[in-house]
Image (cartoon, rainbow, N blue to C red; front, side, top):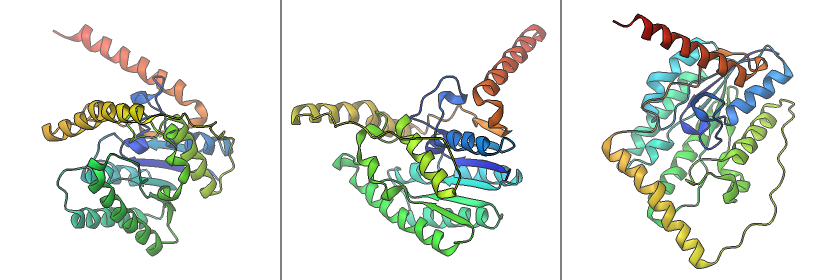
Length: 280
């Protein structure tokens, strides 16, 4: 059955970690993969993705929910709150209330809503308080899914032990890499009951590292990723400030997403050229 899949949220849904310069914002991600498989089942399926990296819950509610619902989606995915949890000071009670209102707005639309728990990412002890917040948030997401069994599909990311393998993660340890996004797409398609052609090949034996190597990697990770992230937060800037949604209006994945993006780029280049020629 044909329909429309709309994905909203932050970097998780935008596709950060699954890098591909041939696609908008230089990423692919699980949502693109799900949309592609939907189109293989029925070429008339359409897809939009409004997610932008670093967006907090309030921004997602304000910028994405109503535009997404105005498209009248059949399936809508909603992953939000992770960036709020990582704030140095956060009122978790208020966050959960805001999240509840957003979910109820989506649930009343009649679309099939995908909600996600957050994975228990192995992190440095320095970040342990943020993990406890994640546990609280996940229990809240599960409760909302139980309260709306007819409309909400819970993707319980928390329970998937395969993600304890560091080879599922990008170098920042916070975003899935290509393998992680691919596995996520497979699990979502299976849960939705959609026949697909994606496969996941198990990894070989893990690389064994000594304590000195492990400590060195941990120090480098803190230097390269953790400190810059909190530095940006203190300055009030994010990696998504200059980005636009990857697929702001519905496309037909059956037409080829890379092909559609090339057309978009050529159109933008021509428009920029006309603007330059007409400038005083």
